[in-house]
Length: 288
Image: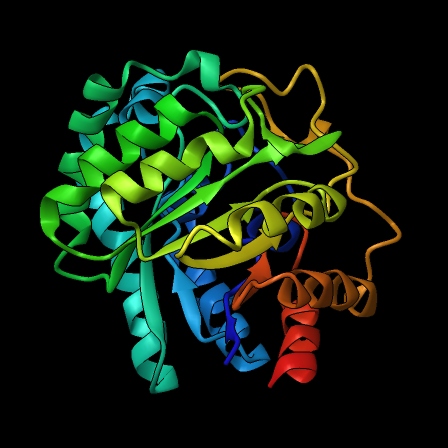
């Protein structure tokens, strides 16, 4: 049985809003929450069985940088409520509470020490817990970053999904340069319910999945549709318009990549940045 995740939220919001801002997906929570709800609805209509909350960037370091740190809990709750409302209207599905990387995406050297990071994640996990079925730690790019997330999210007793991001040029490695198999002792220690690969090139994901499939845990993947991660996309305030979308990753080809992941042992598939509703519909057609 294959579980179909939703696709990317942030890039879909930007496509609908027609602009990128330094606040990225948070901007929609501030300006147009209904658009967030509409994206969730669109993914469920396409066949997704999971709604991932629009809270990836709802983190103290992101909000404090823009002078809105006092809105952390309100925005986290709003993101959860919108996903739950969409799930309820659809009539079925899981809601995953997204917890993104502290420091910045793809920059594990900028994340705080595990114990410090865990304090932030623990607070947010408690905020999410009344709404979500599980917590999902997204784009964890080093062993230390994953450890901080697992320590923090574990305080609620809810299931945890751990999603790792790998080197686009070598999917056998995390973005930190560590071997992806270095995460296996952490899996044994914290026992996440699902371990996934996300926000990496599909080709790199295809290298990573076989290395995790034998780790005794449910494995999945949701790749991005970028050409790669630009060197200047490396700090809070960088806008995603410096990242370019691929032109060779239509729904059918993306589903072909997902087939490789399933053949290698993945039982959960979906999409990340630049992978939208038409891709999710193709996954549904292929696997359901």
